[in-house]
Length: 82
Image (cartoon, rainbow, N blue to C red; front, side):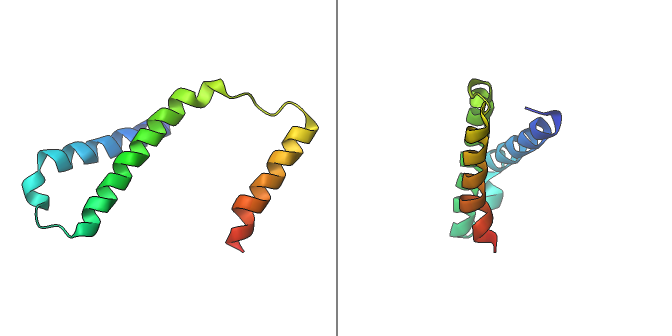
C-alpha cells in the first residue's frame, strides 16, 4: 500500500474512532447516517483485505491475457460512463 493510500485509510479509521467515542453527538442523526457509517466500515475492511491480497495476484503474462483484460475494462467499466 502506498503512503498516500495508508494515510487515507488511517483518516477513515480516525473518523470511525471519533464516531464510536462520541455516540451521544450522533444519537439524533437520520437513519441514512447509519447506512453511510456501515458503508465506511465495509470499505475499510475491503481496503485492508485488498492490501493483504495484493501480492498474491500475478500480472497478465501474455498479449492475449492483456487484450482480454482491456476488453473487460472497456465493456464493464468504461462503456457505462457514456
